[in-house]
Amino acid sequence: MNKDLITLALESSCDETSVSVVKNGREVLSNIVSSQIDLHKKFGGVVPEVASRKHVENISYVIDEALEEAKVTFDDIDIIGVTYGPGLVGALLVGLSTAKALAYSLNKPLVGVNHIEGHIYANFIEYKELEPPFVCLIVSGGHTHLVYMKDYGVYEVLGKTRDDAAGEAFDKVARAIGLGYPGGPLIDKLSRKGNKEAIAFPRTYLENDSLDFSFSGLKSSVLNYLNNSKMKGISIVEEDIAASFQQAVIDVLVDKTIRAAKKFNVDKIVIAGGVAANSGLRDLLQEKSNENNFKLMVPPIPLCTDNAAMIGCAAYYDYINGYEADMYLNAIPNLKLGEKYKKA
Image 1 (tube, one colour):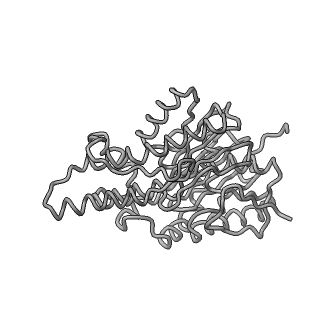
Image 2 (cartoon, helix red, strand yellow):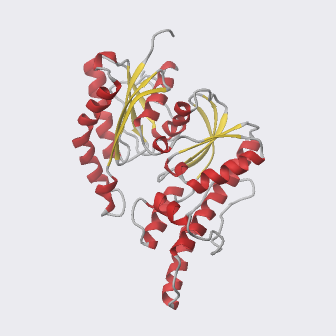
Image 3 (tube, helix red, strand yellow):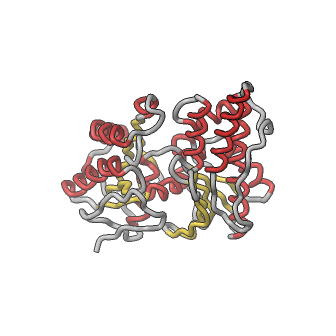
């Protein structure tokens, strides 16, 4: 394929309205993210209806800004990529309906992208030399997956959470401590001042050979510790709680990731998703990767959180592999990794 392919990508699965222009899958010409964090802080979490309405208000402006920054026009666009799941259905529909309107009016191919898959592809943007196969740990507010990526678009899900996602546990514990929202960055910052061995919170490894995760018990253990301390009049040290909780999460994440990499005999490990920005997770996984001679690849912070650049990268590879959608493409809030939409 000699011609450069320019993708206009839209991401609106949760509370970020993002639009990106990506050249040939890996060269980001623009990546505009309009965050709603300040709007949702007062609610202690994302309110789906509020998020959807804000996407409607923002998306046209974000598209204009992305085109302007990339110094392209609609005439230069070859592919329209968009997240169609998983995520909040109302939020997804805003991006999806906009993308379909653009694809129809501009007579451009439409590609529906899996949001979880997009997180994996963030690594291809940062590491131009990266090629499958590898093991990927995806950790965010809504998802915790351990995946073996055999080839572009070809995955084997090795494990996933059976209850709370890692990021969800961070948010709930942060709320219980009184830190606010979003919880992950706040706990990460506070934990640096605490003693990670101060409180013996449980590590849930499940069955001996399982690569699944479970964080509900850990979350409950933290809540019980807080309640018992309050009833007994014992003062709590927030820094120690944050550090001990965070260590309990990342010990399990790192242990299972290293086990998966050994099992599938790969030499590369990548991480993705919002919790991939956690400094403790990055440090411990780097340490264990070095000990076991794995190359660890970690996307920069802006590519860990929700963004359209990762969707543009995934859309490009889906398109060249024949996964073009049509106007029947719909939002799928519980879309599974590896599921692909292809027009008849």
